[in-house]
Amino acid sequence: MSTTETISRVPTIGQIWPEQGGIYIGQRLIDGAAHHIIVAAGIESDIEKVEFKNVDKAVAGVGEINGHADWRAPEQEDLMLAYINAPEQFVREGWDSVYWSRSEHHDWPWAVDFEGGSVRHYVRNDEFRVRPFRSIVASSI
Image 1 (cartoon, rainbow, N blue to C red):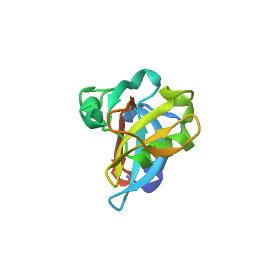
Image 2 (cartoon, one colour; image 1 turned 90 degrees about the vertical axis):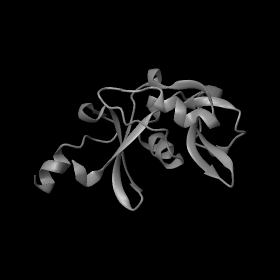
Image 3 (cartoon, rainbow, N blue to C red; image 1 turned 30 degrees about the vertical axis):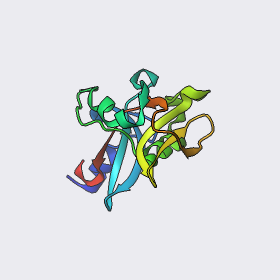
Image 4 (cartoon, one colour; image 1 turned 30 degrees about the horizontal axis):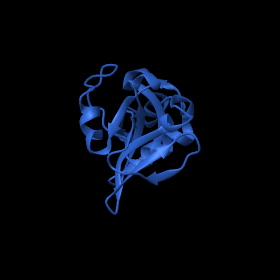
């Protein structure tokens, strides 16, 4: 498969990527390799009222979405990419606009507020939304 064929299969940022089960929100580096990042489409994909300690478990419990079972809780970088490239896919008002990441900094869990784009730490037993994400190595398609 040529490089041109590979690139032509990747949709425009913010568009549905049917073969990958969600909305394509761009690329980022994960462990030194470029990955395409896909978010489960729409607010109906949110898992509500999750404490930080249950973020990974909540997403794992979702199982298969649109033919894919490798969904994971987002890193803080995934959520920021989503805020920049597909904010309309998320709740954007009030406390419901806060989404947990699985990232921590100095033992503080990070969340992203889609109302204004802020990233901050919260108390572990706060209950916020979490959205399933998945990633694929960019050269693998």
